[in-house]
Image (cartoon, rainbow, N blue to C red; front, side):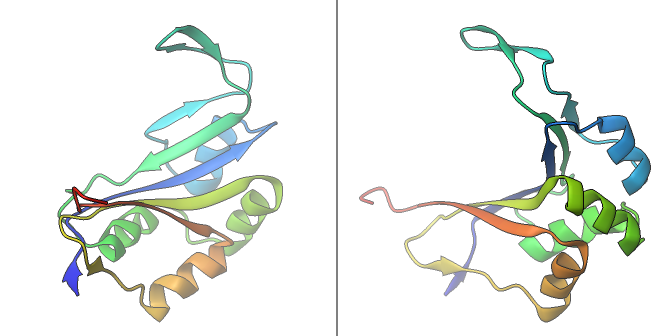
Length: 137
């Protein structure tokens, strides 16, 4: 099994009443992207009204870095206070979004017990989008 060709990762928090400033205060840093419910953003067909609030932190690492390192770096820049995380995940939908881009037909990855425990302690869902590198798929 070959390693994944490219990886992107983001911490995403969504919620109807989400205030990005409150999430930033809880987690100890600003996001890469944010909006409140009802904000107007420019879309392909004109302005779009956001249906929910969002706080999104993108990993700053290269796409060639292994997935676990992306997660470790993001967690390293955020609060380690599990009460703050519990407050966040009790009220909002929160996940680590992992986008995996395959160069070949059979590539794979593993998540260590340390990383899966860190996700579970924070109440985070691990979401995966996998894009095939097989041109015939």
